Amino acid sequence: MRAACKLASRVLNFAGTLVKPSITTNEIDMAGHHMIVEAGAYPSPLGYGGFPKSICTSVNECACHGLPDSTQLQNGDIITIDVNVFLNKAEYAISAHYDQSCVWEEVLQNKCLNKYNHTAIDGQFYFYQFEGL
Image (cartoon, rainbow, N blue to C red; front, side, top):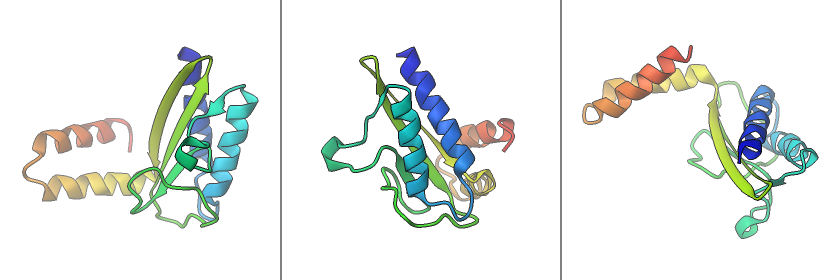
């Protein structure tokens, strides 16, 4: 399990370095796929329920499990990358959001607008504030 966790984390961190305007989510997927396979692991989403890609990339309004394609990322896009790996009979999944300035603005907006969920929003605000976002 530890090896699967470390690999997924490395792949996610590497994928995050690729996030910039003009790159396609398909390019991020191919880079992640190559890194996973080179490590002797299998990208869990690939082939699951017919899913044709190795990672999930959800851009802007896409809530989850977005399918990588040829659409180029634009400045200001928010992307969530999900990495799932199967290695040594263990599976691990990890995800992260990218475009930190937009995430920070969203937290501030939610904090102002959502008076019924103060505890969760305050926790989210605290987390982002002290993670340097």
